[in-house]
Length: 235
Length: 235
DNA sequence: CTCCATTAATCCAATAATGATCCAATTGGT
DNA sequence: ACCAATTGGATCATTATTGGATTAATGGAG
Image 1: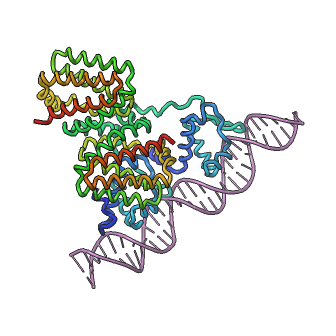
Image 2: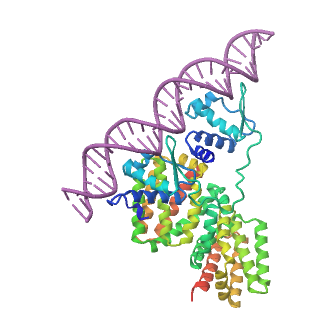
Image 3: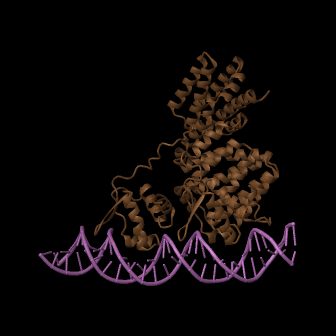
């Protein structure tokens, strides 16, 4: 039960702060030995109470990522935790370690061609599903909900190519997009204006699939993914 | 994915919501340990009352797919999804079950474009390795030995694209080379005449990579793979 | 009509987060 | 040596959040 609580706690709200600080340590913003801002400053920066902030710092201290001294401050440990010691799993751990740039490059290889195939193979049910994803995405009230239906649409397009192996591979790669580090990228890059652009590009792809126009579908999806990559990495 | 028909259908029942959430868990949108949105948020997202939403969550809880805690939230069970070996293992196992047609289709999507990238990124060591694969393949005394160096060449080309994720995915797909059923297909399709054709096509790809001619490399590799597919699957 | 699922409106209980206050160790200047 | 300011450490009452549960109203399908 304790293990379960720990696991759930790790995903809970308070440690959103933990993830933020971990990110800042990982990307070098706060290198080893750096003195963190004071608790009273961090609580304002992260918009949480000092109590919650301290709970997060406690987690980081127990993980050995920071050390704290009364009257002096908190500091990033000189021994930056190398990695998660992922137990040497096969493909999953390596996939999870893939960079956004690599992922987008793979998607750019596969998805446009999958769309071209889908133009000739999509069933009425496939097209119906895509339409629903479109409307749901457009009605989405917040970014996470939009992301959800955005992802579903891409899955639907891949699925319409009627290649089970392709779908499986895509699913595996797609799982990475839920990694906290990747999520941060998306949130930062998804402005309302860009979301509108995405919706328009999505619709063009689906229209092309409706028209059974493979070339158009491939081109539209490629354009969309190039846009996404630029927003994600280029900004 | 008929579960998506909850909008217009009067069948927007609890079971539909169950299927939707199951889908989101299965495709990795909500990975193990993830805290899913609050009930009051989900009821709006799925356009159902909190009562039916809770009934759905109850089903998922009884299935062990989620756990719920008052005051904290609901979480995806850590042992519900793929878990341990994760997508890697499941991907590998499903790849083994994939049909040769599906595999060749995937290779045709990925490899030519990888060759195009490799033309711009291959190091001298990469090209050297390809040359060695070529010579070894040409000197091969029997079919299995030729197959070995043939496979190594393709791996080398993929590797020269300098996309670790792509290499990992390709390795997983390539693992099927050891499957008995697939081996039988190859042996049956690989006549001495065809082997000579393959060697010529291989050399054209490598020459193009030497010349840093991406278009030529992509075209040559695509032609080769089309030939292989035709020999494998066609009449 | 009845039956059944859904909806809507409350209230409850467990947990998380907050805000305030005080304590203890360290630092830097006098 | 001393003192004031700074900084992390700790506790407590209060508020907000979140799943749990009940009840009455609504609305088709048979």
